[in-house]
Image (cartoon, rainbow, N blue to C red; front, side, top):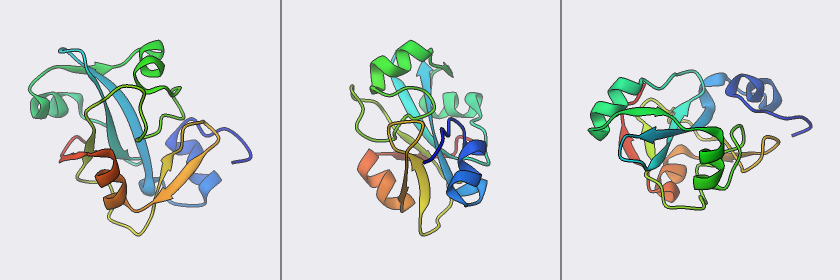
Length: 131
């Protein structure tokens, strides 16, 4: 991309697509310690309490340094694939079933158009309601 796209709102005009087809890779922390990306539509927000109930543990946002340590990526460019450490991936049921969504591709200047079912399969994602 010609400029940085740290958020779904910034990615929408840069990609020329609706906010709902931007896939956010949100890195969260559980009480047990492991971090997990939540693949969520750019139009939605993670419901931490619901996600915590699904995972049977408390959920909070991961610290910036911890995100990079666990995933190998900076916030704003966190890829849903290829993490430095194994992580549990959860895909929200509401992520659109369109031909292509746009996901972060390892830097705040890169996106990857990909079919949502392919992304979920490659990431080994569990399908849950998290928004």
